[in-house]
Amino acid sequence: MSMNRRRFVKQSSASLAALSAVDLAPDVMARAPEILVRRAVKPVVISDYSGWEFKNGGSENAVQRAFRGITSGMDVLDALIEGVNIPELDPLETGIGYGALPNADGVVQLDASCMHGPKRRAGAVAGIEGVRMPSQVARAVMDYTDHHLIVGKGAQEFARAMGFTIEDDLNSASSRKLWLEWRRRMDPEHWLDPNGKARQPKPKHERDPGETLWAHEVRDGQWESRALAAGRSMVADGLIREGSFWGTINMDGISPNGDICGVTTTSGLAWKIPGRAGDSPILGAGLYVDNDVGAAGSTGRGEANLYNLSSYLIVESMRRGMSPKDAGMEALKRIRANTVESRLLNAKGNPNFNIRFFVLNKRGETAGVAMYRAGETQYAVCTENGAEVRELEPLLPGGPTE
Image (cartoon, rainbow, N blue to C red; front, top):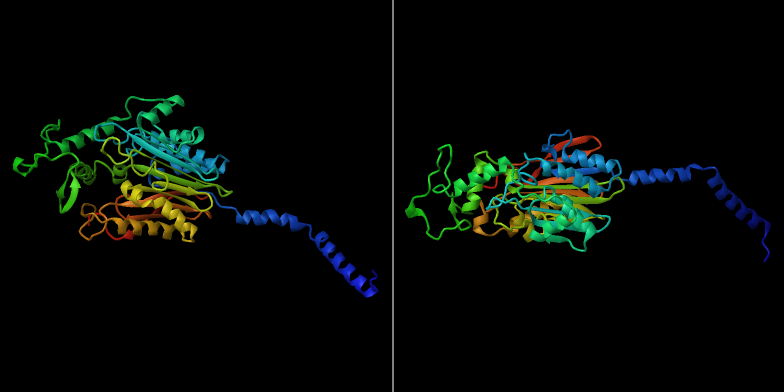
């Protein structure tokens, strides 16, 4: 087909202009990495206050160690687990790992879980005895089995098979002393104070012959078990810090390329019924990670998280567009609405317990929220600017027993 001269010149000029644009702009390809850099995430690690407070005699706390690992190219989960190993091994942290407050029989039973966002894999152990770092065993469950959760004696035997050291007793001198004090407060007629500071038992006419360790009774206008009441009295007397009484560390992190992982490790509620497993080893309750959305974890009353699957709820709320703070508040509101038993309510009709969430989204934005700003009121974050503590934002004013 023929083409007139004017049309030919017009098309040729357009083609030459396009080629010249490419030739004259060699930085077009050079700008592509800049666009990717702008879309990259600034790495961050978030944790409850234990991630800041304990160093096990070293120079780094948990969030610092995890952040250093992430920024040096380690797998995010490996870095987080190295971080939580610090308080797990620190006997001063009586809420997790070695030296943790034991169950009612004086036995330290530990729970842990981990989730790997990029791999879409997870692992957990519950009620494991004799292993100082259950977070590492949870990672082994994820790496070497098709299971997500192994419990009790089976978890210990799995750890033994994987080469972990199994100890007869994880109590420190401090945790054993605190357990004996709890026993004295539970049964002052039979467990005596060697210092002669005997606690007065209730008069016989006020005691129920069928009263048991876990029976609930009214104390200070609230329903409470004898076991929990004795533990709370130790917190009130300054023998146990509130964070260790509920006993958990949650840590989540994101790498520069946007990979998200999380880990939670705990000894659970102090003086718990032997065999009790809380929310920490249950995916969606005490920990949840979605690499496309974010991560959430918790400390505080585990049963509230189990009933509401709070960590999963937070991540799904962020999937729908909520900020980390708003998503955390949504979970707190759900817990408040679903807490209806009188024994779990204070005089105002609100939950008589505290619970906290640590939230991270895909953009590296974080938040720490709590039912109340009471007891443990701060959480830890580590960024390129270093480690710092931030204030938890409460849903309700006052404290849980007000």
